[in-house]
Image 1 (cartoon, helix red, strand yellow):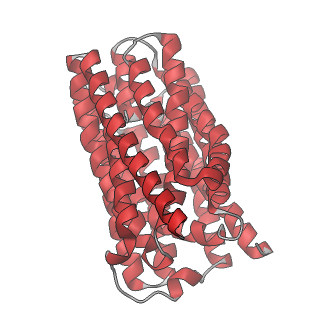
Image 2: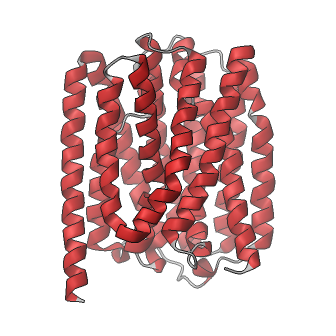
Length: 390
């Protein structure tokens, strides 16, 4: 890795670090904030729809950027996506009604959807020489350093001031994120894997393994409790207060940072077998949340961080290894929109079941995660068979 590419890699990490301070700080008490504004339980699921919007836009931006075949388009989507996020969330300081707050949280997901697939293409390119698992893992460590600092800053502001001042404080890291974006763009204006691509969008190159992998992750996401839902019920059930919930999220993000690099190394060693972690931890999250015990809520947060570490590191690296370079941006987009739909739908189902009956919610999660593990087992067997033939 030459020096310029190394600097760009570090800048991509710093962008994520600063941006994560903004959106993870704001998301840390998202459900609790809605409850504070008098929102009904279903409002926490509405925030989950933001995952669908964000993931759908990952598909749109990935496909459109691939069609344009331009480095300017790729960097433009990255810049627009981050700008949307760092502007929308501080505006929560002025949201006096829960539906306005929910709308701003949804707008933040628009920004994430626009930038993520194209940024991951750039990241996959600059980490090619060091091992994608390690590269994505190290990026996730930097990313999660911001995800830890943001909720801690937000919790401090809640303890000493109020929600309005807490949200306004997020402007500072947002400005830093945009400075880092334009610096990286100026240092690495030409993305090699983009400039050589034909200007077309094709779905043929993703392959059978990609669809099997995607099905497994869809099943996993159907039972994965969104933090907005978890934080809403933590306050709704009287388990924790607002600042405590923000701190709990900081715990989750700290764990995410700690596991990202080891998970990345594990992926480089055993590849797709490392994905078995996600369905197991997803099931444990629902089990610990429905116990309604404060100490177990902290254990739940730890496992939530582990699950996100897997999601943000090896789930992304896996796609780069399954799909050829010419279909990578589209593959990230397809995976994103399907994962987003399933996570959003699953959020409404889980919210309804948590209100209805904790054991039923746990049974639902058990079923989805067992099926996810089954699909992963089929994928790994297929990959092992192909390796033996070659």
